[in-house]
Amino acid sequence: MARLVLSFSGAGIQDYELDKETITIGREPDNDIHIDNLAVSSHHAKVLTILNDSFIEDLNSTNGTFVNDTKITKHALQPGDVITLGKHKLKYVNDAAAGGDFEKTMIIRPDAAGMPEQTENDHKLEQSIGKIAADLASAGSSRSAGPGAARLQLLSGTNSGKELQLTKVITTLGKPDVQIAAITRRPNGYFLIVVDAGSSGDMPVVNGNAIGKHAHALVDSDIIEVAGVKMGFHLD
Image (cartoon, rainbow, N blue to C red; front, side):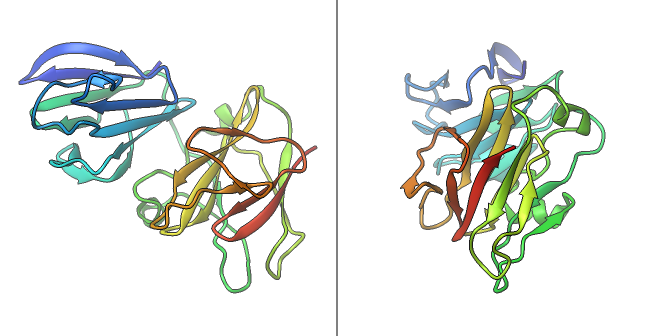
């Protein structure tokens, strides 16, 4: 299991296992990782963990969140990354992180033609979704036991009817700077999560209702809307 190792001025303090989907970090006692220091904001940052992968997001903190001495807003954590909050450091350790090449992930970019496109993870794509890596799991991981095959069918745009097979551990949907969501394939089913609500703060919609901040379980024939694109979710 992945964990964060907290230290202050080089001295180790405590290990925190990332055993929940969301772990909060901040000065207030209600945080999962409580750092009682004035340089740390009340609710400074949060870490989202999906399967073997974790992402850190700054929560508009006063002094900022740094990873490997670079100020970040959102960042896909890699083993050995060092997060700095004030004078405290958190080292990301993940012995189960998948190695090797990362597999392809689908990004649906609703352009004038409504054409979906499949793209390899690259530097520009990583930047476009706010430093959250588009590819999360190796091909071996994606073939692990799960809920079975599923697909998305486009319901809007000139390419309405086109289908996308959900064969990856994670499939990213949306448009950079507008709205980004992801469908995660887990042993107990498929779930829709919010990656970036964009400047509007609007959440993705399932069957006409905005989802919350937590993972939303998908069922056959759900209608999903992300960044203005409607899709039907189907289990095969």
